[in-house]
Amino acid sequence: MIFVKSIKDNKKITGLISFLFVILLVPNLLLPFISDDVSFGMITGAHGFIHNFLSITYHFYFDWSGRLLTDFSSRIILQLPTFVIALIKTVSLLIVLYLIVRLPQKLLKFDNSKFVISYLLIFLTYWLCNPNLGQTTFWLVGASNYLFTNLWILLYLNVAFSNYLNVRKTFRILIFIFIAFAAGLSNENTAPIIVAFGLGMFIYKWLVEHKISFNWLIGFFFSLLGAIVLLAAPGNQVRQQAGSPIFAQEPMWLKIHDFFINGSVFYTFSNYSILFPLFILVLIGIFYIKSSSTQAINWMIIFFLMAICSNFMFAFSPEIPLRALNGAFILFLVSFSFILQFLLNNVSESKMIRNISAVLFISLIFVFLFSYVLEVNSFNLARKESTIRVNTLKRASAQKANYVNIPSWYIGRVMRPHNDSYDKYFNVKLGEHYGFMGQVKEQDTHFNYTDKSLLQEVQKAIKNNDSFEKINIYNNNENLNKKTMVVFLKKDTLLNRKYDVKLNTERGSMNFLLNSDQIVSVDGFNFVSFDLGTYLYKNKITNVEIKDSNNTSNLYSVNY
Image (cartoon, rainbow, N blue to C red):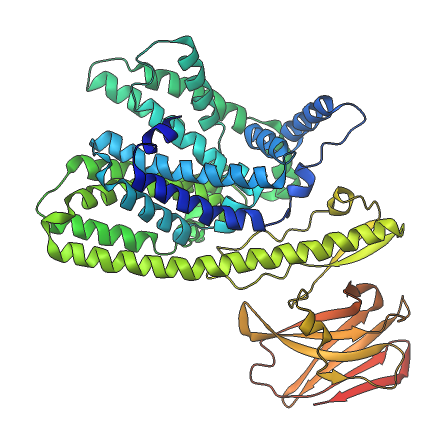
């Protein structure tokens, strides 16, 4: 309601939100079920839905993780139609961005005159600087773990700083209790920081303003309760013992020492793209103009330190996936929002700052458009690949096959290959999700197998043999210096056969083992692909030799 009420009377704000809604809905609609979506969407068991759901949730908490809220939300949302899921993710991000902009407006008492430009700049920064855009924003399970949890944190901060609880109505108090609890139940690295911030605000109100803050007292207590539920979950220890038993047994001082000495701490701050240069540029602008705001700078520093401390929490984690850096990223964005909005509200005092800001803004727009087109194309490719993979599973199920090979995901080019793409993890329950109960093997496929022209193309035909049709070599979209060799086989190729494949160049050779059980079928074409990396970048290929491992006299050679 607060979101709708704030924008309904402003046509510019309404227009911007509507435009961004469409912009964000497109990739959300395109990205298919990936990774853990298939397993979290399955509520299986011998009893009814509710009983099965509660049973799965119980085992998840005691055997894997304390993230009850993300587990609950992802499993429930995945029962909904695809379009509704896309709507939920899209609206959630729009609200997150709104709350990031709204908090400084509230504390610095700015009006809505700069809301549109502030919102748009925060959106651009979110998109271009996100440490893992695809996995935290568009992948449903990833969004449940990071986008939705950050939504609860930002709701908590905005409500706690408001007069929401001045009217002591039970319903309002209960809503705030749930929001505070959800904020504490967010993520392992952000929960302690949010709890500490609530305690700090309560102490500040008590010692400096000489009053007991009802907002921060309730917020601290119930966010602490949520953090305890999250961090004290038995599943956390079970998962760490199973995945990293050595790390689990290390003393705390050694974990902290390794984190700061072995470079992990620098890794946590190296994936935010141009975020920190933007901080510096805005700060330079603030110090250049005549006006200054100690309050804006102080809040910037507070949330900046919160973000840093949030990343420091990874000293107690055996691994640091890129998507986990999103919690600190949101706190960095809140920090950035304070100084950005102060600059925008005072930019009229300097013509030079206005001109520089305009150039920077236009540059961000162009970079975003480039990134957006690539992201949408990559997700569209993933949708086509998903259709092929799912149809392969359904055919295998109809044929009652014992096993089936499916091609792996082939990631289309994105602007930041390590930060913008979706999760390629192969979930072992993929076949079961689509009704195939046999064994599913995902075979590495290093080219765009959705392009029929590539499948039909004949670069080097192999004649007069019983097994092979042709050999094609393709560029890799993510890195044009990388190549992929694809060996196409005939439909009646004997199974349980092994072949030695030798790629000869003017400077040496590469050897591969081709098993017939690695064959992938797409649109009637059977093939096995081999990643050549950059080997052919400066090496001219001379020929490819293929021979039967069990019959060395059966040799095929293709000259180039």
